[in-house]
Length: 329
Image (cartoon, rainbow, N blue to C red):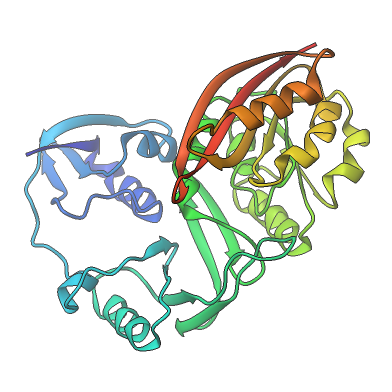
């Protein structure tokens, strides 16, 4: 079977393999092979591999399936649902016995997991954090790698969703060097850090002091501290200081982003792209957001919706969506 592979000279192979492994991009279902002095590393995502290895060649090649590793499902009588975040596995189980069985199976499997956390509450409060039950491991702190970026965070004190990695990458790919970008609800930096790595000057604001501490740490981890300003405050208190400066604004606060549109208009420069996230009923997922943006920005700005993008299903009949909007004064 042909699969995408990174092709590198054999002498550079270990460095490439290590970088791809850190980003969890190696396709473990297939063997790494050597031919004519070249190493072929099977990968799961070509775009992400290109982001991790700035100069690499990706080819399609016949690959040999390797002996399958043991999965949690192999050890249970069912296929459990879990998310991976760094070396942590996240589950959502109400039944304590079932949760314990899943945690044990994860640890006994070949998954590179050292910590297992069970969701113990819904996302709550102004900082959108949740409670966790620690089933295995030392604590709730993790280091997560995503599209060539590294994020330290503590799930007990900050909000972070690994499910949005593809969406964050979609937006980051639109960023040009020398842009001035503003993330109104920055968290630990999953938008800010990749923007800065592409050469943008970034301001990230969050009301959660713990998240801002991690944002600063993550800027240092990724070598972009000189291009990132991290501010612990309500963005509505900060907007006037950055009036008319932003070339790009991220508003990832579904359910209540419309409450902050006046501040977004204050921040926007003469030519600005706005990424507005919303959760709405499937019958009209984009209309409420578009109407709110137009009400806040017109007639000062000409408003053009460039992309109406469905990020994921959020709940029965509800969609998490993004509007990429061009504002031109």
